[in-house]
Structure formats: C-alpha cells, structure tokens
Image (cartoon, rainbow, N blue to C red):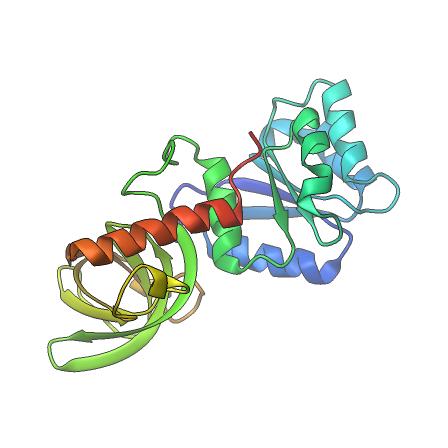
Length: 254
C-alpha cells in the first residue's frame, strides 16, 4: 500500500477538511502533496510549474473557476496531456457528468465518500498505468477493509485486510511478523454467500514483504501475503468478488 515511487500530487478543493483528509491519506501512502483552494490557484500552480505535477486531484465544485472550467482551460492552453486529472465530487452523480468529463480529458472520477483504500487504489491506478492489469487477471487487486482472524503457529491475532486478489492480500496489523512466516487467515467477503456454501474463507499464505517500520503509525503499514493454500471454491469466490468490486468502484474514464 505504501509506494516507494513517490509522485507529486496537486489537490484542488475549497474544503480545508477534505484537503487535509486527502493529504494525510496520500502522504501516508508515500506521495508528496501541495494544495490549491480554488480554480484560480490551480491555474497559477500549473503556470508556475506544470512539469512538477504528476497528478491533479480536482474538485468539480469550487469558487471562482470550477472543475469544469479548469479542465476546459487545460484543453484550451495545451496542458491537457501534461498530467492526468482525477476528478472528485460530493454533489454530482457520475452518470450525469461522465460524458462531459471524458470529452474534457479527465482520467477518472471518484466520490468524496471513498474509503482511504479506494482512494489509494484509484490514485495509484492512474499514476502507475504500466502496473495496472489490462482486463481481469489473477493479479488484479481491489481495495477492501475486512476484519480478519489470523494465526502464526499457536499465536492468534486480529487485523484488517486492505486489498485482495486471487493470489494474495495485504494484512494491516500491529503484530510483529517475520518475512517468510506462514500465516493462517480466516475472513468473510461481503456477498460471498452466493458463491460459497461456507461463509468463511479459511486460507493459508506466506509473508512475502513488509512495511512493519510504519505499521503502528499509518493506515497502510503491514504485510504482503501470497496465498499458498486455496481451494477451487475459494478461488472462484475471490475472483467473482474482485470482478464485482472492479466494476463497482469504477475504472478510469475510458
């Protein structure tokens, strides 16, 4: 969840609360952040140093010049291809604005109600397109926030899963786990009853990497786990869940 390839993100939103919330999430995930409180400040930041912006996170509803106005200005002044734009909204329904945003060159649309995991998923999907799978594959990961019981030998603990794929998951916990340890996981997926007779997934995996140095300080510290024991029924349930979630949270604007 924490990237070692830090990017520079410009957040444009007139809400101090939301700017702070989004900044905290993105900084914890390893990115650098600066702000603009309205459309006029966005344009000034771009004029000063457009090459220093890897992603613009743009609110649609801002004073002076709104998000649509900023996108139109980017198009009219030759900045449309300089950096991707992720639009955020707490007012508009995506179905009402998607076509207009597509024409204006926005890379994605996200609601302000998105969870931290969903925010990082969308941001990193746009920032690192080469790492994003094309179509559904066993490596597609979706953001989740699922309670999990896990054990290492006789030591039982609890934590949260922050993403999930057919091949593995990311475990957030304050427990100290060594890379290479075998972990026994038990958790349920929302809506999985239609895919499994047993509502509880019972899986085993191996810890492949760690961000333990920040595990107690951020939302995204923990351990990357690769599944080593997965029944066909469990794999099918996870596959169906991942496919459903990818559609639900929305892909980038095509």
